[in-house]
Length: 108
Image 1 (cartoon, rainbow, N blue to C red):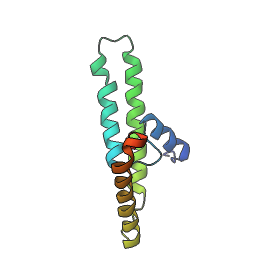
Image 2: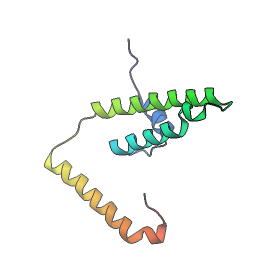
Image 3: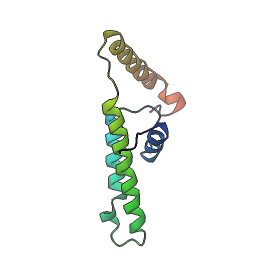
């Protein structure tokens, strides 16, 4: 029987992929690819720590599967009110980024 995924699994996976508490599918995939390139054992063939890289890749792959599995099952609302909330939130984020990045540094 397959183990049910709980919050601890999701939170651990998020941290392994170095993601914030809120991330888009695009951010998850991008971070996954970045970490694969960085830690892939084939890039470290002659390293005495090759086993460590192999374990790291297993953790990265497992974490990605957990997060994607969770996201696929997460209900997405196509309700006009929810869509507008997302649009307005993105507009506000872009507005803040454009005008306040110089004061507080990079807001991303």
